[in-house]
Length: 251
Image (cartoon, rainbow, N blue to C red; front, side, top):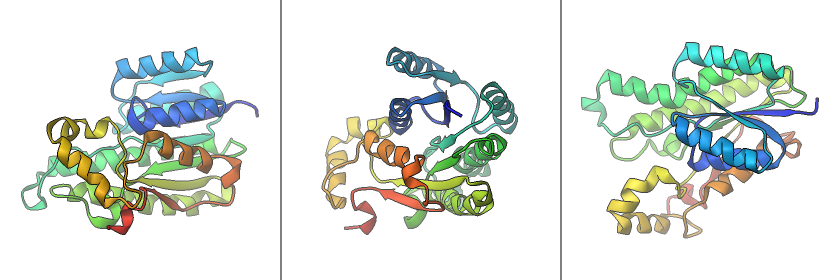
């Protein structure tokens, strides 16, 4: 089996785009998913100009039937899937739990946890056909600290992803499929554009809580993910790798 197939959700910008570029350099054929079709197609065009085989798959990662249909089409087209990167996710807004609507609660859980569940579940039959299957989930420091103000449910959803990683690793180990997670700290991506533009002094101060005294770059997360899906990480499963420059120590 020579063609390596990677499916990446949330791939149109930030960490997802960096992962796509890195795995493209590693020789993967890329299936990129995201909500912004224009950005997705632009990234595909850029990757193709760099001689990377890539396509954009426009399905709603929180819609069970769309995920199932799309993954079936991908699996049948390529015959197998080698790695799934569950990168899609986000804060979804802020709300205190006391006044939180059920709709808001469900939307945050759907974006962060349901998406990883749907995509992983649909991909498993095709990962089993790989010589070296791997799933990487994207969690967060919020999984440990409960999230910032108004972001408690975001923290809950990411804690669920952390537990899901371990549960899935147990189930898939007999098939040689490894499941790990990355937990990025504060990474300089468009995710922080609003506060960067409106409160630059606050944004600049964030590095003071990081042991290495700087923010991370998307490429630094991508390099860890590239390692985790490679044969160099053949004896690593059920782990969550902190990528935060020591931010988790809470200095």
